[in-house]
Length: 337
Image (cartoon, rainbow, N blue to C red):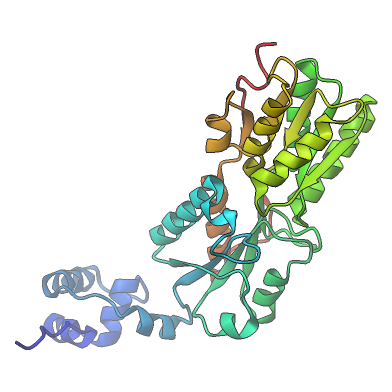
């Protein structure tokens, strides 16, 4: 049995009694096409089941019809926890949905992307999530003349092409909340990472502790095997001669490790130790007890980033950073003393 021939734009033109150019203009909303002619073309397209050839359309428009998405995966992508974190999965899903609504595809790019790799992909531009300072992946897109936006700031670049949380405001909000609940020695548990938002969080914490005349207690944990490293870092904090009475844990993947460490040394939460997190997620919601955290709305971040990038691709957007306000989710880990 021979395969059914797929209708072409020439078939549509012949059936509608117009030129191929008229069919193209009618379908793409270009040129001056009489409404009756546009309606006739639309009717023929529906009757024949014609689908535009995306590749050919891309060649004519200079557009590939796909966006690249780069998540903050380090090392071996098969074992990196970033690919399983709720925040990044919500973000990636929303980016895809936003792009699909604009007839664009989203391609999740490998972490160790080189120039030859990127050059071989048909992309209109890229979104880099949680960039490092002077992030090499942003540089890579730029070197190939591809527009790029970031989710969170690249602190090494003077650019407004980014979507971000209000990191200083968010940090001070949670620190103020912990202080209002009676904490006087608040420790900050940060990732060992050079991401821009990590540096911004540390700067905000340093400024807040100076303003309130309280000690600075900073610990760091590796993002690789985050729960275990957070557990070990928390044990060291709690073993200090003057241990903290609250911990602000910035990364969601650290939450379970902090809870486990507090339990292992008999520090009851919230009676003896308050705990708040910089990113909400299942680790916070299902903690024992549930943990106060910031809902950063990754879906909104992704939608704004896609919109900004498509504006850059089309040449219709002006550089203007967009900020997404966080929503504090107050839970038992900081309440009920």
